[in-house]
Length: 244
Ligand SMILES: Nc1ncnc2c1ncn2[C@@H]1O[C@H](COP(=O)(O)OP(=O)(O)O)[C@@H](O)[C@H]1O
Ligand SMILES: [Mg+2]
Image (cartoon, rainbow, N blue to C red; front, side):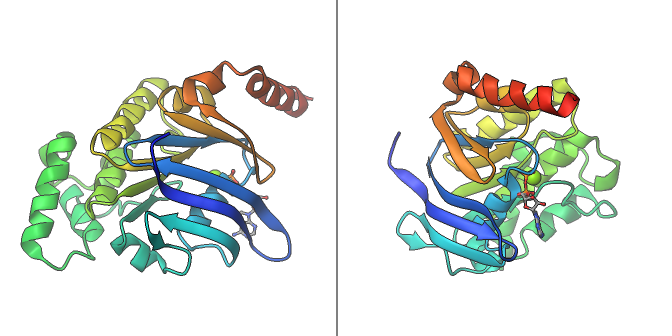
């Protein structure tokens, strides 16, 4: 792996007495897509939320290059180059695409800079300028996900964190979303995503980690993890369990 941009070391986080994630150490380089896969409830969302300082109890180290991210508020994280797209809809359905994009740029005071950034994301996501006056709530699921990613890019982040970008989408659209994630990589961003869609997500990723019960169990190149019998075992075992 190239030199890490994001470095998370021995992160522990939870919502009270019990830690939901423990001893989590991960790294993501610029231009790298890293995916954390794991079952529902494994602690994937908690991990991203903990990095974005949205979890009450935390300990450990979180660095972006030479910046200590740990003490920073979500607003400061955003202005320090970290974008976070939470799980589930985060757009404003009653606002237009154009209005949603402007909201995403609220931290950018310089109007001309904001206009340039909006132009840039519009070239990356051509569907957005075509529909700029359309209410975001009337977009398809895949289009809404693209608007969310476009909005996250407005601050020109170094790191983009995506919580289950493919959830609830038809298989054809899932492929499109992961193509879009690769576009973030080509933009030189470090991408950290969490996914339950194990196979498709790992296929699109440079590296992956498997998280189970709040701990990292395995780490490898994305495509290698797909073929790892231990991954198959983790998932098959659980499926057999839940079908009982
Ligand atoms: N706000 C919260 N308060 C208390 N417990 C939570 C909260 N959010 C998540 N949890 C618990 O943390 C565990 C991990 O949840 P989560 O990180 O959402 O998993 P995943 O995203 O992998 O499905 C679960 O047991 C869940 O019930
Ligand atoms: Mg989750």
